[in-house]
Length: 139
Image (cartoon, rainbow, N blue to C red; front, side, top):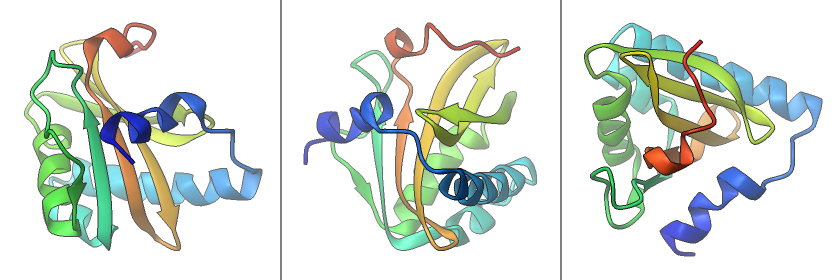
């Protein structure tokens, strides 16, 4: 599966069941709490050892050219975005499941969609392409 195919998940995945949404929300809240505390190691512990992250920069924002794999590398990429100075985060439905909205200076700069198994994130999609963020706001 190419990064483009994986990023398509953000737009085409069916909404989860209530229990799936509740479960995802708990994991998203844990990630949000670790990020709010500036705890990069805590964020890494929330990731499955084989976690994968696809970043869509759309050629407008620097992004890895391939899927980032492994908890340590995924955590480093997420820390660069979630722990950046001036960043505010909130949980909101992203394609029917709880995800994280990333704001800076009053603008959405990223949307993080998650897929979890148990208490760990196994796959994440980070959209930082400004063309795909126009419908979102930082209210």
